[in-house]
Image (cartoon, rainbow, N blue to C red; front, side, top):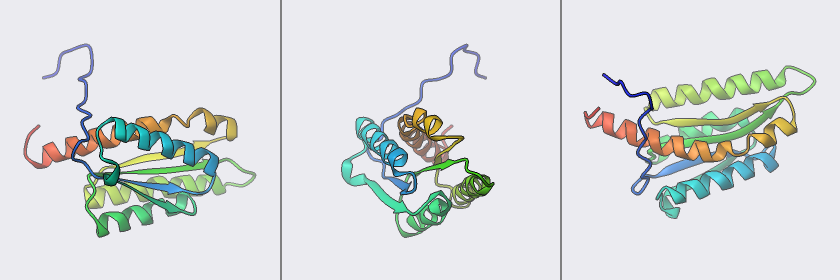
Length: 157
């Protein structure tokens, strides 16, 4: 039973991990900045540069398809999906963001590979730009989840 008032500090040693990053080219000024931060953070956490694989998609809707293809075609301890969906004059943003979230979740659950949802869903460019640092958090979550899943698969809690 956990009784401490503070949450446990996660292990973020990515030394022997392979991490994939799927990045939408749509809203590139946002997604490229998030990608840069995610890559820098992964390197800082010990992930070797040659074990960080980046693949691009046209938009956020396509992230899940490429994530599934990456997992099917290679060995990844975790993936990060980066995208940016902004509200427009129609409900298209709702359709795209919901499809991206559900598709990414489905791939993660079906493959048992952690996939971090790094899709910013914003009302406008200012809100999206304020969330660019989410790239750092996505990298940290990917390493933590990869290590957690690995430990659980080995039968250690």
